[in-house]
Image (cartoon, rainbow, N blue to C red; front, top):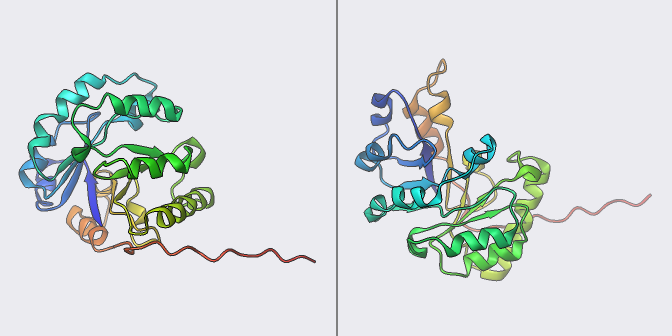
Length: 228
């Protein structure tokens, strides 16, 4: 699995200590996009929908399309097409139809409160990978509700496709080493916490990058309730 370390990572000399890693740059905070393309193995470009959703602002999608365009010339860079948190599936699909950069360089978002059938459809529709995104109902990653929903999604994926599809977990670095076979994850853990005592950006990246997920999902046995 690939671990995408979210930016901005400041000061910039700390970012350069992570040369050779993989990075995530959000359209909501694009300042280090050139830096990470100079030093990174792979770069994911986030549309900033989560930040916009939290602030209650509108997103300028044409500006986002223009921003990602030159960076998609880099063969290991990919981008997340537009999505809207807590919007219905029909609205999400309509936004995908407007994406101008092709499926091989895009990774649409399936939100956990959407039908799992839509997740399977996106996987089967030729995108380079599909992202999973938490929603208000499943906001806490690794909570009981979140984990149960994830198990349901991966059970369906394994039954429908057999071989593990390429799935990215947004804000999912803490899923590293867990039972779900993600191809990649991201977080801003290093950006937010490398300055804390007994922490360093390089040590944090080493620890995250060394933690891998299994290659295939193994369904958990269902627990039967005892009847008195």
